[in-house]
Each structure stands twice: as C-alpha cells, then as structure tokens.
Image (cartoon, rainbow, N blue to C red; front, side):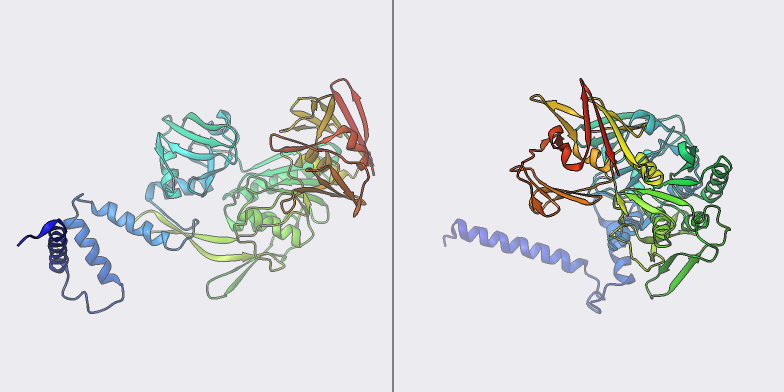
Length: 500
C-alpha cells in the first residue's frame, strides 16, 4: 500500500503526539486531579520537579528567589519589593543617609529605571548624571524590566571599586559613565539665607535624621532674620512618613492633621503634629515637580490643605501609597504596600499627584519665581543676551535651556520663560495645537499654525507668528506689546519690564 507524503506526515504527527502524551501521563501525580485549585501542594510539586528534572539543574536558591519575585510581580505594584540581605542593609543605610554607592536615586520606569536625582557632592552628580535620565546598562548588562532591587544591587558595591553606567538622555542618545563607588553620607537638608528676608530650605529626602536637621536649619534661618521661606521639595523621592509629619509641625499648629492612611479594610490612621511650630502664619512657597513623591507629597499636601504654603512648580509624581519595611527572620526584608494616604482634606494623591497653586515649568526658574511671588514687586525686570544660557529676573540669575535668539533679523524670546517669570501660566492645548497664556487681567491664546491671537475671548486683527524650534515656542519681540511689556534692545542685549 502506498502511503504517500501526506500519509507519512500524519503518521509522524500521531507518533509524536503519542510520545508527548506518554511523557506527560507518566509524569503526572495520581493526586493531581483531586482538585482544580492551585495551592501549596501544587507549588511544592512543581518546585520539586523543576529542581530535580529540569535540564539546567537549577539551584534551590535561584528557584526560591524567582518564586518570591514572581509572587510580588502578580501584585503589579512597583513599590512592593523583596530586599535580599545585602540590599536590605544598604536600603536601611540609605534612609539613615549613609551607604556605599554612586549617589543616584532611581524609580521604576517603562522598562528602564529612571534617575530621580543625583545627589550633591557624589560621583554621579560630579560626573553629570541628571534627573530624568534612563539607566540602560550596569557594567554592560542591560537592565530592561529587571527588578529595581536587582538594579540597585548591581550599582552598589565595595567602596573604591568602579561601576560603568550607561545612561539614555533625551536628545543626547546613550552616555557612558565610569564611576568610583564611595561612601555616601550627605545631609538631607540644605539651607541658605537669600535677599529680602527670604530663607531657603531644600529637602533632598526624608531620612531618619531629617526632622532634626530641618528644625535646626529653620531655627538658624529665623535667627538670621528670615520672615518668609522657600521650601524646595523638587526631586525629593520621599522616605519616612513620620519625618514628613514632624517637619509639617514647624508650620501647622499642634494636633493638626497632616495625613491619614487607609488600609485594605478601610481602617484609617491619623498622623498629627506634636511640635511647637516655628514658622506658623508666615509666607511660605513650597516648590514641587514631577519628581516630588511619597513623603514629599505628604508634606506638600498638608501645607496646601492647611493654607500654610503656596505650592509652585509642576504636577507631583503621584505616589500616594505607604510602604512598610518588614525585616525577615531568614534575612533581608520585605517592602510592602499596606495603605493609601489621604491629605487633610481627604484628597487621594495616588496616581494623580498634587496640582500646584502656581504653575512654573521652566527649568531653573522656580526659585526666582518664588522670590517674585513672596516679595510682590511692583514690576518685574528681565535681562537676556542672545544665545546665552542665562538670564536675570529682578537681579536673580536663572539658567536657560532655551535662550533668546535672532532669526532673519527678528529677535525671538523664549515664550514660557518670559511669561512665567512675569506671573503668567502657560499651557499647550493638545486638542488644537494652540498655546494659552493666562495672567493678570489678560488671557491670550496663540494659534501657531496661522498666527491668530485671541485676547480675552476676542480675536486681534494683527497676527503674531510664533517660532517653534528645539521643542520650544518663541515669541517675536514685535508681539511683546500684547502683554504690556516695555522692551528695549541694545545689540545682543534684551531688557523687558512689566509693571503691575
């Protein structure tokens, strides 16, 4: 009988199917059909088969580690982590402001971790690593979708050794940094006395000693004559909840509600101030941005709800969950999400963030904008030089990402910087591509495609053609009169005055 090619294939497929069936049937446990539910017995059975039969001869340590990570992955929660003993020790040191590393703080990203900040006077900061950079490789090993604790473990190491970090930066491609690990022991609070009775306090994170550092620094500023304050919470990833509550006690009356946490059962725990406030009733501007997270948002939200500070900057990160760190008897620790926090006015920040009272998105401008807000001058004076990455706002220096430029004989001003420096809010309207500027007694909408301008709901007869270059919008100097600016041009120098 002639079988033919098709017939032979059918016989081969059937034969293979029988082989596979025989293997699976032979490996099955007689008890496997007893229950359709997956439980401890199923796990132990699969674990034993993989450990004893799989061709790679996996070690039990590796399998247990993978099982733990798989368990955590099912939660879809980037903030719940298993911390192996060495990572747990470093994590504890970091919250205590002492550890060996390169001085970067990272957050989970879409595939690759994102640099939250490079701390001052650390190898990473000195080398030029910046917030927003993506960490692509550590010592040549790609870290795409690698658990955050594993990435941290790769970056950390013995003091004096070198680690190679590959960074991806928008507009720059991939950059490679060879960094020497060192002992990182930096204060969490920075203080400075500015002009006009304005104190400045920057909080980098909320560690074990932050509350004491903060109160000492604020006390010194008050003694030096500070009557108003800029509280800088930008690039602050958070830390100990209790530290944020204690810091809030410098601005809110004793017994004031700072934050409430609500657990899976709806049980609410309230955290209230106990300290005697040092700066209650005085003018405070708290600076926030997209990297202000967790405990930084707790403090900012409390100050905003109590009217103790004006929030200025950009929308915050939106990490509104509380993690507890549980030391494990077997070594290491479990950082586990156990509650969501609510602001005093019961706002839920998780996944949303805090919206600032005054939006200022120009990099480098918030401190000068906060000084203008606190001092309320009768006019704002801006000084720019063509193609130079620096400007003056009422005499305060501001670094410019997009300087003033000249094109075809026309001088163009960086739109966002100029308007935000004078107190306007600038928003790109993605619906129609327009740019909206809202400020004192004047709302202006620009339509870049055709040059139309609408002021307080009425179209102007004259058009203003904005220039878009390097991801920024520029206002032609001829359009400055729309905002009542007094503009003077002297060669490469441009001065702008706006009276209020």
